[in-house]
Image 1 (tube, rainbow, N blue to C red):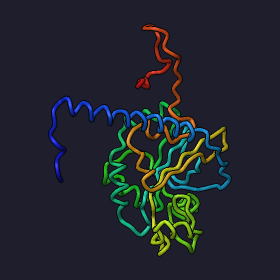
Image 2 (cartoon, one colour; image 1 turned 135 degrees about the vertical axis):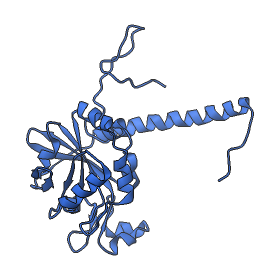
Image 3 (cartoon, rainbow, N blue to C red; image 1 turned 90 degrees about the vertical axis):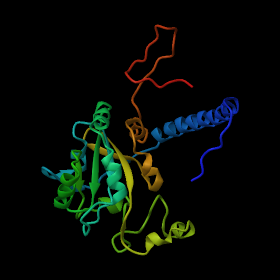
Image 4 (cartoon, rainbow, N blue to C red; image 1 turned 120 degrees about the vertical axis):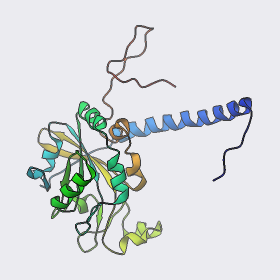
Length: 246
């Protein structure tokens, strides 16, 4: 791989300021996109999905615990496999206890869900030394309904909001060739005992995992931070972590 060109400090500063302008524009676009994401309508979940966890059977509502929101990482782990997908494994390896605590502090739970039987999940989780919530959807339609398990004999194949014809047109016809597992992230909100689906992302969109804010930005309630306009040096944010100005 070639290295960047060597230049003077003055020329570097010109180039850096040009890049900074593009970075600021991207930040503004991301802020607008996150605001639009929070305004998406939501869909009530009426299906009684049953998962298996360390305490036995669990409903989708149970996965929330006491939290109002739930983020689910759809992990690629076919029932016939002995190990989860290497890319999903790398992502889960990076889940820190602090990140999960920060999510909980924003009334948001995190859980991994895979189609492998819970015994395989528990063994793999122990082998990796993980301590986050991970449930099995084995025997459930959950993975198919949220379009991360592909099998035309079970349900019509749809991936990243594209049906069969659109997938072929986009050069992704290979996903129709047989059963497969795909990555994704889905977000849910509860109001009392009613559960709503607010957002799902797939493919490279699922790579947004990486930090508390990146995860919260995918949810209906967002970062849940309120700020007052600065009124001199005495002004202070209403909650703990500032969003810095440009």
